[in-house]
Length: 240
Image (tube, rainbow, N blue to C red):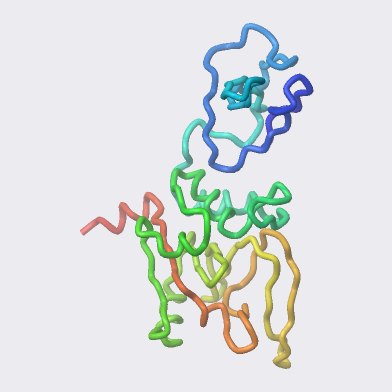
């Protein structure tokens, strides 16, 4: 979402606020216009700017009340995980948040940040974070061990391969499907030929057909599966 267009304060005009960002809301009704606009249909929020002398200065900005906002973190539920993830569906891939978008690790971290879960920035750190429950894979894990883990995937699980992460959204006929911010995917056609599809967006794909290279699949190259328990799932798992 973006702050309201404000020619009076260009630094605060149409400023992108990423999913899960928390900002102070100024209480009470404003006495008059904020940056030339009456705030009756907007939240008056406070954002940091650079003062003329170079120091920090907090200034008001407007955020439309019909924007996708919440007064607190969303409940950590599977429904919210899917709902938040699909809000990005079709958004242009942006490495390091270029193009006003996200890359794969930025995508999953923003989804979970909207529910109060803070994650490392990069896939390499996310996949081994000691703060997250995970199943890691190495050369000693054969195909059967990997397929057993795939069969146990749950909605919201994060599947890592070198340089990439995907979020599980469910399965069709026992085959897991994922949503991920990706430049593209490779798979084999029925005649065995390798095909590359350029996506450059947040996309929904099946997991099993994805090929990492000419001899290994994504499943073969899995490095970690991270599970961040939804509130209701953790409560259920703690029952005797």
